[in-house]
Length: 381
Image (cartoon, rainbow, N blue to C red; front, top):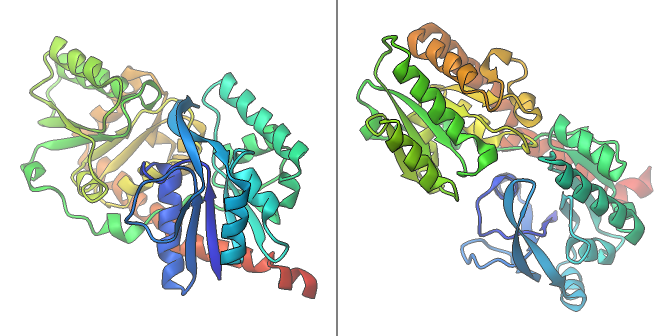
């Protein structure tokens, strides 16, 4: 098959939806399928078959940085669709009417259109925005062109129903399990000191400050813990204020800011973790970074109790804690710093649990869905 991922945003940022597409594309290639990207303004030249179909502007939405298309040229869109004759358009939903919406409406009858709903709301404004997009998609007729729609998590199922009026099944998010499972720890952390890793953007909803507050509580509570460090991987607008918090509370001996880490280095940082902590408060439709940390087989993974992270850690509720509650996180950290058997049990469960989200497993389900809704399949039935 010739499969095109449709995405209004850019491929220049390696965020969750981009990783979803890249992981699936790598698996599809092993199965002999050809993958293209019909995307917004993108400058990367290292990815084959990229069709950048709009100019974009950067915005903040749902607690995330993203870019949205100003205008997608209908003439250019039609030319790409005619030249490539895609078997499947795999659309990332919600989508913008002026770019992805035009691609969908101009897709020929021979092309199946499959959507994957990704978003969980961060705020009332984000929920309202998704509802307006759903209303516009229905009004424009593009929503009626879909042959199938899935959601990547139960949280996304809920918003797909409320905002778009769609009943969807879960075919979950994906990641490259072998890549993270085979990663080796970085040598500078192989020194017997317990390593707590945070990886994410330094924005309010990701909760890095909550982790630093929890670390301060451990340092100042008078109990004796095994030596530990906190490694902060990521950058963002709160970076300076987080540095200031560390200095103000004399945590510089145990807190290291690694900055933004490359995709090549990310598996090694997670493989270096004894505990991986992700205190995000909301706006998570899933939790790919949790899976990436779990796949190391070494880290006890802790997550803020939001709907997206609950979809990953729900079978192990003791690894969830009340988001924004530094005392609750400090208690979870304390237990795993002092109880090696608990930490090992968390890590072993995470390794096994994360395997089911490997791109080969989930990708096979999506390929079957593509085949089930293909025009030939529908005519034969």
